[in-house]
Image (tube, rainbow, N blue to C red; front, side):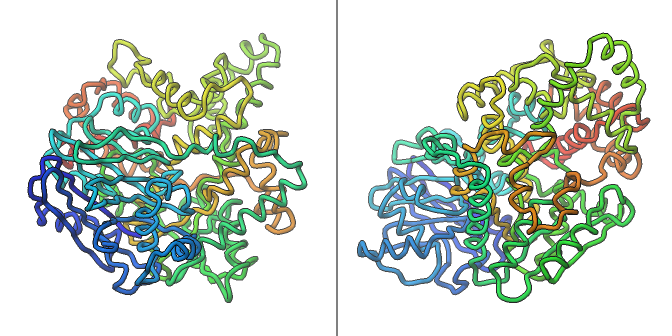
Length: 636
C-alpha cells in the first residue's frame, strides 16, 4: 500500500524533483516505510513520479518505488494484487524474470507483457501509473470498484496525478476554481461524483477506468470493467445453492486478503457484515486473530460494543476496544477536516480514523465489511419501495386526514424512537409518485425539499438530477420499474466509491493502515449481482440471503439485530459542542463566495436544527466541511 503522485509534461520540459519530493512529504502518512522519486526529461514528453511505501508484501528494499523494470518500464503503484503469485508463475512460463518477491514487480511485468489487458487479470485494489520509456507512452488505472483513489488535474501543457487531493494541489499551477455542477451535486448528495471533483480542472479517475497517454497528450478516460456486463450470461442458482455459493466465495475472498508479510486484523462493529469477515478470517488464520471496534461512552444509542464483544468471544479473537466521549471526537475534527482534500459530508470518517489509529498500534492491515450493503441490499432505501407501496395501499382519506397530520406533529429528531421513525417516514414520502430510480435518488439525497431554500438558484432542481440520471444510464442502462438489482449495481459503482470507500481510504491511511474489502472481490460481485432481487430484499428483510447463509454460523443475536450505521452523534454536537466552530466557519461571507447559497436560509436551517424543529445533521456537516475547505485554501 502506498501513495503515488506524478507530473507529465507534454512539451518535454524539465521535471522539478523538488516538487516530487514535497509530494512525498504530503503523502508520508500513506507510506511511512520508504519513499522515492523518478524523472526523465526528453522531448516530446517528460515524466516524473513520486511514491511512498507502506511495506505489506516483501518489505525488503526490493519493493522500492517508483519501480523500474528491466530498465524500460516504470511503475508507481498504490494497492495490492492478491493473485500476484499466480500471475508471476504465468509470466515466468512466458520467460519474464523476477528479482524480488513483491507484487509491485509482478504488476510492472504484467503491464509490460499484456498492456491494459493486464488489469482484468488482477484480483485486488489499485491506483497506478505505468510508463514505457522506449515507446514514450503509458496509462493510469484504478481498480474495478474504486477502492483505491486516483485523482488528476490538467493545465495547458501538463498532466498531474496523485492519490490524494492535498498532494495534487501541490504539483502545479492548475486552476483551483470550483466546479458549479460538482458543488451542487455535493450539496444534494454530500459527495462529488465518482469521476469528478469539487474543482473544475481536476477529476477523480472513475472506478474500473483508465487513461492512456502518449506524446500527443492524455486520451479520454475509458472503462475497462463493467460489473453488469461481467455478470451477464451467468445462470442464478436456486436459494440453497446460492447460500452455499455465497459462503464459499466470501471465504475465498477473505483467504486471499489474508496474504501479507505483516500482521492482519479485522474491524468488528458487531453488525452482520464485519462479523462474517471476522468469522472467516478466524477460520483461515492459525492462532487468534485481532479485532477492533469503537464505542461511545456517553452516547449509548450509538454504541454497538456489546455486540462486537459477543462476536469477538464467538470467534475467539484478541479484541481491542476504544471507548470515546464527545471531547475525544471534537478534538480530532479539525485534523480530519484538514485531511479531506475536498469537502465531504460523512462524519463517520471520524470514528473510522479513530479505530484505524487503534488498529495501527497492533496490525498493518485490517479487513472491513464495506460493500455488502450495496451488494446484498442492506440500506433502508432498498426496502423503502415495498414499504411505500404498502403505505399507498392504505385508503387515501386515512393517509391524508389522519396519518399525515399526526406525522406532521411528531418530532423530527434522532433524540427519540418516535422522532427517528417520524423522520424516516417523512423521508419515505418524499418520492411517493416517482419512478423507482426517482425514488431512489430522492431517498439518497441529504437536501430535502423543506430545506431546498439553502440554494439560491432560479431553478431549484438545477441540472444535478438530470446529470445523475445520465450517469445511471451510462453505468447500468435504463432501469425498468421494480428492477432493484439495477439500483444495487448503480450504487455499487456510484455512491460506494464516492462515499464509503473514499471515507475508509482517507480515514485509515491517515494512520498508515491498509484496509482490504473482501465483499468487493470481483468474482464474488459477479456471482451475487445476477441473483434475483427477492433473494436480497423481501418479506421486510434486507440482505435476506446473506443472513440466511450464515444462520447457525453467526450468533442469532447478531444476525437478527437492527442495522446501525457507523455514525457519530454529529447532530447533537452541532446543537451544542460544535456551535462555535460552525458559526465561526460557516459565515455569510464564506457562503456567498460560492455563488449558490442563500446564507440567511442556511442559518435558518441551522437554527431549526438547534431548536429540534428538524434533523439536518448531514446537510449542515456537509456545509461545515465545504466552508472549512474554502477557509483552508481549497481554492488557492
